[in-house]
Picture 1 (tube, rainbow, N blue to C red):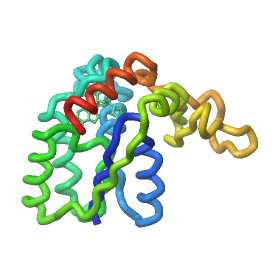
Picture 2: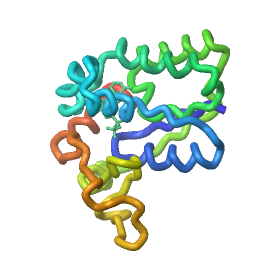
Picture 3: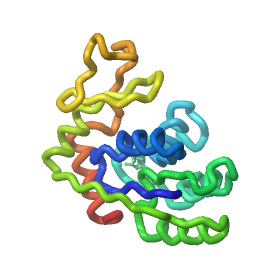
Length: 179
Ligand code: ADP
């Protein structure tokens, strides 16, 4: 089963994908996570895309499409992918169609999350991510409670693009190119 999880930034696509991934033994393919990994590792690709991701604009389709092909073509993930954050515009959607045909796969379900801009702002500005295990908390909706925490407080970080101005820009990019 392949799934696309779709919705604006801050719609908790990442958190919901993790639940689905565990429950159905699938693989979460988050283009945002893949890009942040390149940035943190300071690879050549990472350096090229840092300012684009920080500003809330979209990274070029060529870069994204080649990241996607490396996973869709991998037998390990055959018919087991949750696409989180992809496709994000029409050329990416067309590319996904071609890749699915090429590797004899299809999309079985599309889940669309609808959230208002006010809630999105809180979700984004309150988001904390554990830099060790990737667990996601939120200062307003899901605060890291001392005795329930698996992560040390100093590992909890805000994403660089999680501030109000960039959140509004990301929401606008979603409305203009994705929705
Ligand atoms: P969100 O959807 O919450 O904004 P993501 O982690 O999905 O967060 O994406 C963070 C950033 O990574 C985006 O603002 C964009 O710069 C880049 N990015 C992620 N996925 C794509 C994609 N499919 N195409 C182009 N850029 C992308």
